[in-house]
Length: 122
Image 1: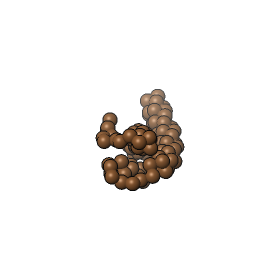
Image 2: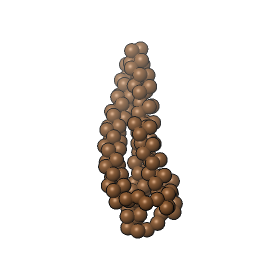
Image 3: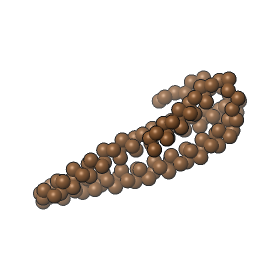
Image 4: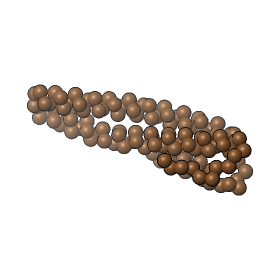
């Protein structure tokens, strides 16, 4: 998924950087919205998975605090090992979708005949 979202954003950035290109911006904008919907759905799914693992981590820690059992320590470690990559992946999806919103705005401006000279990375 990381490779897909990064390569897609680069593809759109390259199109937006090409001031002289003869692109069908309306078609690109519609396709971009389809991709944006797909990544927003993916982001929601990963948010739910990340929250579930975070709640499992807190619950396991709380139970471990009340009654120390070595197997609970192993369970907590396993949950944390999975939680960290989920957080990193969600971070990529969240920032990617935010950037895709800006790209969509730039494509919309191109459809309306305006020129976009610089897309802010903020």
